[in-house]
Length: 202
Image 1 (cartoon, rainbow, N blue to C red):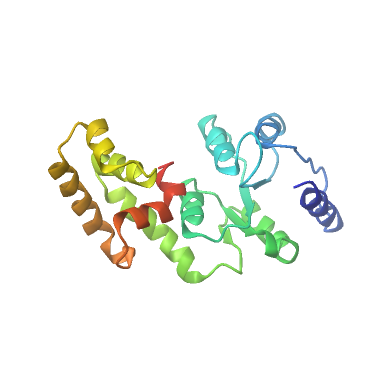
Image 2: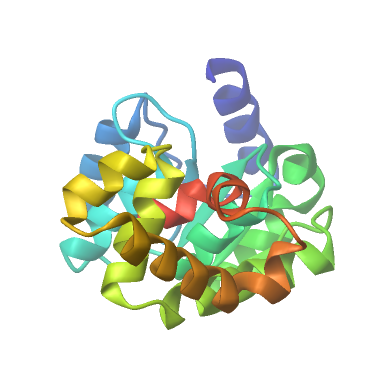
């Protein structure tokens, strides 16, 4: 957002940072980071053209190692899990940006992970647990979970995977067994929908 972008730039200048470049969208950010190799890049998760996660993935695909801080309103565990999945060092809530951004930058510049102070410890811990669960799934189970997360009907999943309804239910049961301790009695669909951000990109 233009107002936030301008305000953050002015705040960083007042803190003594120099050579600050701002970008209008995700494509601009990607190209600028590749071209200028900055000491650190602050990315909004929600940007036009490419979102923050897509920019980080593209940078990693090209071997760019610029330290990243994600700036966002999102406190959901799925977003935190995705940041962990991409090994993003900084995760800053916009509500904490003015008070904590300098501390976050300093941590990241020294190769240290930093998570916004307003985030609940339980959510930060659980976000890593989500990745552990997804890592325990077989390739078939993960493929089915992605289809469930995209709200694909069971009959359609059977067609796509070329399996019977009975086999699908067996897979669903196996997946639920692996996430049971984290699902808090929710259905597989509920759990998948809740964590679709990281499931869809895993």
